[in-house]
Length: 202
Image (cartoon, rainbow, N blue to C red; front, side, top):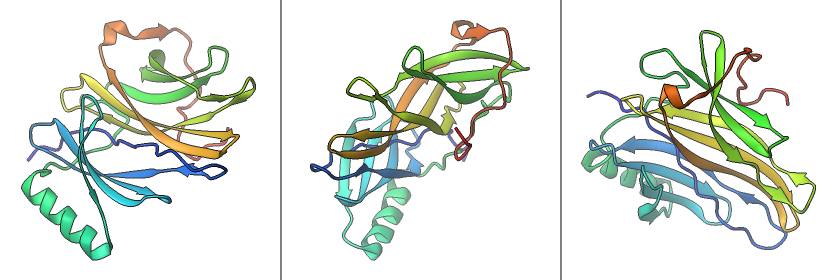
């Protein structure tokens, strides 16, 4: 069975007043049609949740609240056996090995750019608006996961944004789906420094 290179999805759950908003996700498998993904969401406020999500819209199709570790193990095993049979490959490089995706902040425009590199040349594939709080607070963003569709025509990116809000700190990941067409890339002539990776100093 050929692995499908798809993406990680994450739901940001609203926090209570003066509490931290945080949510983390892990990818568990895909259906054979390539239309849905099974994800595990761990949220300090809501606990552990399994979700079946649509890969085009990111909408939740179905969810299961996990009671304990044994329940999680059984539920995941059953869902992967019946529906989500296809493993996923997370990779910044496209299936043909030509393009590499990385992230770069564009503070002047208030965006976090999703960029591609090929043979030392870089270009902008798309942009993610940076979250703000008031007039001065701007989120710090990091590209956490990149996954290409098997046909190389779609890129799924997970961007984490950290922001201090009046109600408390926010630290969440969001899914961004980008259609990839090389002729639509806004190429930049000058090469940039090494691609940013998670944990690199800002």
